Image (cartoon, rainbow, N blue to C red; front, side):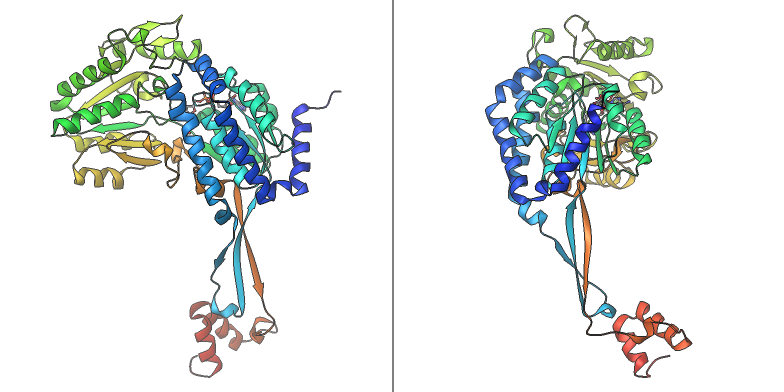
Length: 482
Ligand code: NAD
């Protein structure tokens, strides 16, 4: 019987990891620098792959994938030495004399499974964290962006240490084969149903997991008073819906919540903004990505063709299956039980839900699973405070969207149905590390009451040790306390 290629590969990586090579700071730096060279030297190849898979404009590809990765690599190269050095921890006085440090260690051989919408960003961003932390890695990109997956495999195997970092291409069956193996960590980006399969497989080996999932990110849009603020807000909303992978992004705005009295102004502003960004014939634009494939196209078409959704279209709505293009489409008040309001849209359809009072948005948001991001466009500090404190989401962003993704200093991740675990910057290093506690004691001081035989006096001393620490023990020993 032929050997399982995935098993052989995992065994090879484990051998490399056990050799200790990936733990060396010099190895980590070399891989990060080589990744930088890969991105700088092969920019055109990456642009072509993203054009082929998703029809992304090179600016979009640079802005959302290559640029943030270069920034992350430089940030990691700057921080690596500090991140790798352990940190001191205080110990109770009762342990005196002693010292403790927390030493970050790599987890071992890790599996990264990624999604198709940002095939480079969502594969390489976790890979940067895994390398920084000193792990050996298998990366499985999504089969739905085949040109990008093939470029990732070629380039990673050319630029990086192939004995420690491997790309495995394939779809569901390859993913299933990989999940049969024992990993020291699984970092998964994708949908909640597949996340459940991954977690079930991970549970067999007690493998820790990070789950970067999706859901419906709402944007609460208040009736901003100044026309400048309104114009900027509309541009930011449109760019983060239609202008980022045609809305096929986990942190894209999924739907808007606005007050009834503001909605006609809002719709007019959104229409005008859409026209200015994508023209009168958006099918001709090269500034909007295409839908990834026919299955997703038909999924979106079905959402739009539900009679109550169709009836709510106030702008756009045309579809071109041959070119996998869907026009920017705005829907006004589709019923909350229709597909566009119950499923993650992941495409260029933008429902607006109207309410009497903007504060009622809190109740609506809380009635749905916890989103990856809650956006709100408002200058009302009271509303900001209430939205932050009364709802739960992976993050909250006021008056902009998407920008949070590129910040190394804040964690990226979800909560509840939108996932768990977090990454970017130092958070990625932590996500792929284990902080081992190393405690050093001396023989200089030794409390006799630690050892049997037991008596009441020793019990009192233990009580003091836990309650009052060293001072309490001293007082009891000196006879000042009972
Ligand atoms: P998906 O869950 O279908 O696939 C994700 C990955 O899992 C792919 O590589 C796929 O081949 C693999 N896979 C599928 N079935 C598998 C199985 N049975 N066993 C093992 N592996 C399997 O998701 P998708 O369509 O690639 O992505 C869309 C979803 O991902 C959306 O819900 C979106 O919100 C979410 N997403 C989240 C983030 C984030 O950073 N939080 C980013 C992008 C996408």
